[in-house]
Length: 187
Image (cartoon, rainbow, N blue to C red):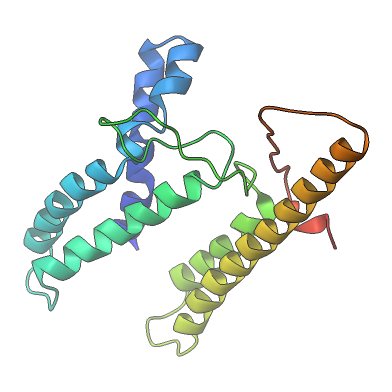
């Protein structure tokens, strides 16, 4: 769990730069290179090397460690792209920010399930048979929440665009973003 927590948090290491930047530049720097696919490709093997040496003897190959670290960071990077701030997946080659506008930045209804599973896994014995069920349940509930957020966002977007057409309102760009507990509206 230590390695998972460390790796899930690693892309946000760019917050350190905020101590030396003004707010506008900090917003541009945050979720930049450390949230890119290149960062994941470069850092996952290095973390795997460290974990491989630190945990001897073990039954994990360097390749399994690398896959573990890459998946952990990719989950973080993809989830960050689900909110309105955008994520620099393609840094440093492109400064385009990927944003799906599906989740509020710190949505409590999304975050509660992984927190509960984390606490159960942290305080239960490794022999506790339901540990895997807790982990899978938290994952499934998060995926379902994202799925409902996609459905709700599409429904809201369709409704707003239809009302705008009825009222003769034209637009060049359209932007909708979620609020906390997005799952609650549309039900």
